[in-house]
Length: 274
Image (cartoon, rainbow, N blue to C red; front, side, top):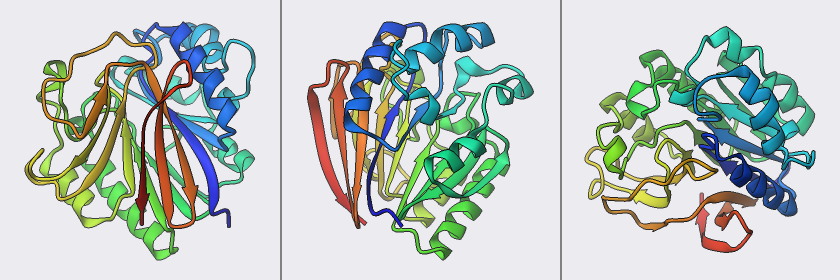
């Protein structure tokens, strides 16, 4: 079971494909075993855009290999017919290809999870955008999924969905976590959550001083893979008005999240212990 590996994260390209391509080319220099992209691929849901523009950009516009190992989820700008979305992907095969195990899905290629090494990864479908649009069945599935991962003894548990539980921009000030989602986030020790939706680069250790009802949630919002920038108007632990992506390096019971600019410069780094 691998205990030392890295993975990549980004979200929200929204027609800024040169930024996404630049970030992809930087991602591969860190040799991630796989990556995640948490929604808003194109300005509106359009399979031609996804296939002919987003996919090449996710591959660095030079077939750098990130596309073949990047797990994708929906945001509000990807809100089309579910079956059309599902027809674009085969994440179960991707999971097998990258060496993941225990792949399971509530909804094929939309809400799914898997293990890799000592870590568990859960991806939720969020075509409504904000975390408050997650369905009650998804939240129940998340609870069960995390319980099962705990039963298998996984050290780290990472979650990915479009809208962050704690929002800090005027554009999405009302898109905050529901009490049901908060209850699940509090029940399980989640190592970190990775989000987009807000076009910012930010990290917040979400406690009740930031958002009532959440005890302790390590939230990374990296919605700057090409989407137009938003302004942070509420407190964060750290933020930078920069296009960015993250590399998460797992090493035993520790993991380090490093945020990089599209040109590859390190902007922020923090190590956590589970």
